[in-house]
Image (cartoon, rainbow over all chains, first blue to last red; front, side, top):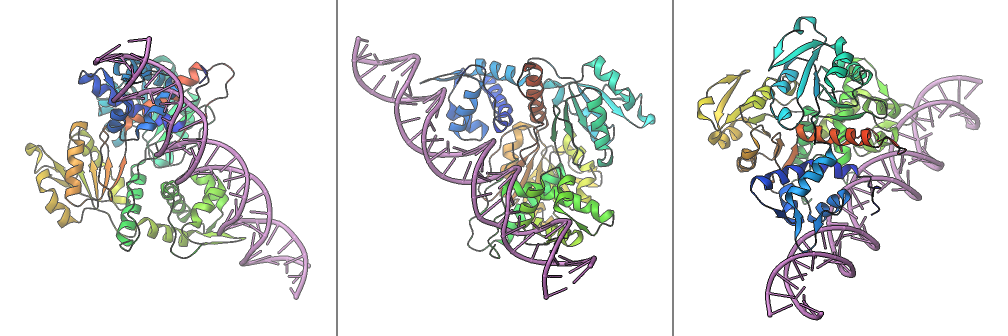
Length: 227
Length: 227
DNA sequence: CTTCGCTTGTGATCATGTGCACGACCGGAG
DNA sequence: CTCCGGTCGTGCACATGATCACAAGCGAAG
């Protein structure tokens, strides 16, 4: 592979964080090197896939030995852009928004909740888990001042598209959407979604079909998220 | 297509709930028929994909006209197993578990939270949003009595695999995992995961690479979840 | 220096998913 | 009855992703 022509496949990108977490566990256990096979087991994937995925990052392994855990962890963090913090803005200070602000896992993993934003003036000024609620009209200034890199949409579905537009207008190029709605963003903006009801409905489908197909057909395999 | 040989592709299954939501909107707007093109726009996908996806359910469209909204909605609900409720058990009554129990969207969409379960005896007996907390050892009886179809893991990562094993042992064949850990389940059990930190890290990757590649390379397209 | 066991990196193959293009078919107009 | 605009259903080609299998390369032992 030539040096800088590594366009990393989307499917691989989605797995890198899983490897990262596995590597972090290995560091905790003071394990210095790891084989693709062991890493595959920890990440719940196939060993060949691990090797191919890691090869997109560069040739960081040693044949006959494996991968140096700390070095690989560092390289992967660098590739994922986790060597610095990404301040996050949560839009929507309702149930979900508050719960997300309360969830400590974000800050701990380099995504500090810098600000909560809501359209409801009566919520502005409240402090939730140490984070102040601002009015959504302040988004552009807040984004610039706080260096917001990622916006999280935690509003009702009806407001989601408008909020997405405002985030884009405020210069936020990465959006995580929790609202049960399809939203569209311009090219150059990344959008991912988390939809709980959707996940449950997918589970429902497979369960229902397991129940129905009690005749000879082979059982469904456990289907995992598309990434 | 012969009558009952419709093995629906995984990618299609993941899109069905999105179509379902779009159809529900159309019903609200009293719209009787819809073309694949319109539905595609609402669901944020390609029209040909819509037609192919829907064709797996059967030939429910009319050439020159489109799809009957209500009829298609009914057929899709049936296929997804949404004609009856799926009682859900949430394992872990901490921050996340309580937030999930509070989230009304589940019950509303046919997934009532039947019970909260925790290993901490001091939490047992509490009522959270109308749902009583039981001890995790009671899982088998609860599962049978309440007809639990789906288990939601909302525990710390360290407990996730053990909880999954207990759910499977209690006869729960569909699991939604919120814990940031890879867990494995036997064949015949469906497993899906929701990992917030992972989503943020994926966004971080693309943002970092947009920032870096300010030279001639074409911009990344907004990457959506693999389904 | 040579051999040997082990593990990586990757070419090749197969499976799955996407998108186009077009024939099949419907309903309405004349 | 025939024509015609419109939309579905699907065969086909292409893109992406998963898996296999194996040569290349490393380190240790003798």
